[in-house]
Structures are given as C-alpha cells and as structure tokens.
Image (cartoon, rainbow, N blue to C red; front, side):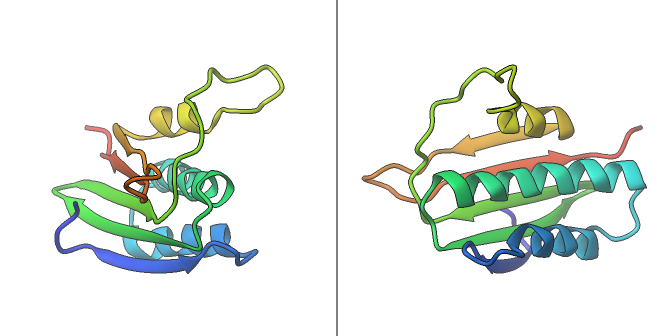
Length: 129
C-alpha cells in the first residue's frame, strides 16, 4: 500500500477513462524524462484497461506515490480477476501482462476472487542510473 500518495477514482464505464488515467499519471509524475513517463503511462493504462475489460468493476482507483526517485502506482478495483495469465498470442491478444512487466521495474498482482473481491496491481518505475 502506498503511503502519502495521491489517489483518484475513475468511472470504469466512462469512455474517456484511459485518457483520464493517462493525464492523471502525467500530472502527478511531472518532470520526468519523456521515455520514463511514456513507459509508466503505458503500464498504468494497461492495468486500468484490464480492470475495465476483465474484472466487472464499476470504479478504478489509481494511487501514485514516490519511493525516493522511483514512482509507485497502485491500480485497484472492486472486481474479480477473471483470467489466467496467458502466453502472448501471435494475433496480439494477451500481451498486457507482458507489456506491464517489461515497462516497469517491479510488478505485483493481487487477484480479486469471488470470496475476496478487489484486484490490485502495483507497479514501480525507477529512473535509469
């Protein structure tokens, strides 16, 4: 859990939700290199897209905080994680998890279940040395 972060809640049914999340990440991260910001925005919007597409949630909560020079992001929903972790397919499907893990330095997924709804994706992105 991120302490002292900025949290914003988004309507998962809003057609602009991913653009809104991307803008929020840009506002909160601020003066980072364009490549750093791009990778982080891509990973966060992919986590949000997965929540919208696969969890059945109505709302997505995005929390952004700092861990030294690194940026921590938590994407949480109230849904149930409904997929296995597939191998990326040649047709471009199922590449989201792979994409997220390659764009950030640390990735952690806590799957929401029928008994304990609420999927959480935690991402950590650090600038290059």
